[in-house]
Image (cartoon, rainbow, N blue to C red):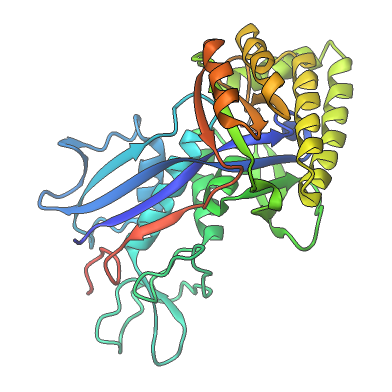
Length: 380
Ligand code: MEV
């Protein structure tokens, strides 16, 4: 079938949310819940979701992506469908998963191939092999394929590119405030670390720089991959059912910080804890990871981003888990527990009134599930 299908996972923050906004490091992990985007050529011109023309105000990620990547003049009409089991507004990176899945799908739809004569990568559709470069002048470095994914041995989208395009789309639809943490975890999968310095040469992937409100912000992005920790361990995600927008939570911390000096101390302590958590993760010491998570929760409570329902769910999870904390912006949303007994922990959280999901700690990142050779743009 002539359709492009791409999927990308949601994420949880293991350590360092909020402190990351003030230059401290943070570690996130991709989860089992994914968003899948399908692009299908359609008879009618333009871009439709179901029977409705795409509304840019309602779907800023999709509209941004189309503007960057799709050539509507040469492309067919498109029907877009989105399926997701990442709950929205719960701090699990649903918008990043959508942005990364879209980036992957549109990037593949635009087409990319290897010129057999020169071995160079080109964008667009390979016509007869003599004039393949539809975007002459835009040089494209040979992209690394997404983990384990090659389509017809050629067309490829790189995790690096999907993470960058996803981040740009997030930033444009959130007034430039998005940190690259969610899109990095979604594109690369596994565990990722974000810091204002290179923490480890081996896992360092790139520096990302972006203008944020008159300033230039930069982050050093690391891909920790899948750590040995996964054996016999799960994360249980517990949803409070309360929706607390990230921007409000971040603004609340900024406001309290101006009068409460203890908040900066707590942020410094979180920064130190992220390094401890990182060491424990690298050493495969699950007990130490769990302890650091619980300590991180206490510090998040100190900076004022917990909620009575989050406290109830964390307390319910602790007796059967190695550690538990809120994840993401707090004020509602979700908590996570690291456990060797996912069933017992999940039941305890549900009994306390939370809705749960069980996930490994880090899953495969963005994936190109299907793509016709050369993408969907018509050859000239
Ligand atoms: C991320 O899920 C939560 C915050 O750290 C905001 C951010 O990193 O952009 C609170």
